[in-house]
Image (cartoon, rainbow, N blue to C red):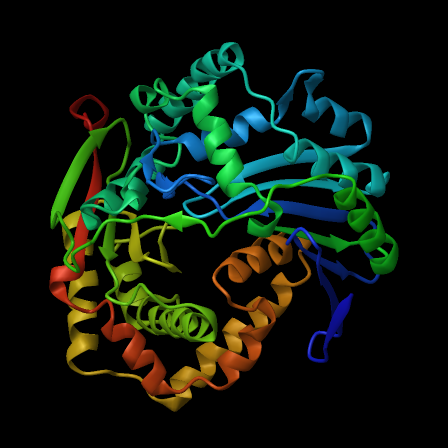
Length: 433
């Protein structure tokens, strides 16, 4: 077992890659009584076209199948796994994103039993056509519920505006129509391709004794057999740089209009430290342009263009990414114009210097160090970084080395007007009366 000590945060991370390829990380937290564990596979909603294990030709699977598989993993022949976690005093959950599926629990006792349960249930698939059919109704209700959430529709509406071919434009849960085509055989094909230990990470943080916990995991995995794994071949379509739709709106039952301006980045094929640096540089650039101390924010707030719902973010994965700025607004068109104007002015004449960078850098480092008090943040972010060959504990050193030119170069990746799009939710006629 290897260990790595981080002086700045006084933490030691323990790591071992097991014979079956599983990466196991343990981060003991002094003074913590809670243990939080995630067991995550690098498999998300965008992986809908791939070469299955043992095959040579690619296949396409129904949209929403990664999320469907996540649901089905909790149901076993002997019963519901949630109940087992509950009897062991743990709170369990799972989530599916564009790029990964995570199973997790938190507990203050019976940690060893809960870790075994987490490993065992994720590594023992049980699907039948009968239970798959039953699940379609449950997930169909979930899809319908999300269709009624204005903020969710706003978020996905903007991504649909940006992307023409890439599967990131497809809702993570799929549609009622797409999941109707899912079979037990589909689920086994996806499971056998993406749930091999060599494509997964186990992260345990909080109250844990590293040697004892690693021995438990090692022993658990040694009792199971896994077939040899060939490289996973994922296929994604070509995607133009330009946003596919410049502007679009949808009417829903909301009291106040909602608007997001999206920027589709040119740079989408980074990994490792280069990706980490680009992502952090972009986040700092957006903080300078749209943060709560920016000229834009003060002007928009004083002119009642934004309210407490105002937000901005940048996210980058291998193959896709997006920047978003927006708010609920009584004047959505004017707000979108102001955001676009701010982008254009910054692109034409970069307005910030080293003093501004140092201010937002210190704020970013402070926010990051506070976040490291959260076991949930550490486990979830570490795994996301790991799947992109980034290192969560490199965030502070990379921020400290950042220069203004790094922000300018990152910002240039999203500054073209042809990469920009606007999506808004407007009140339906009935709700606006």
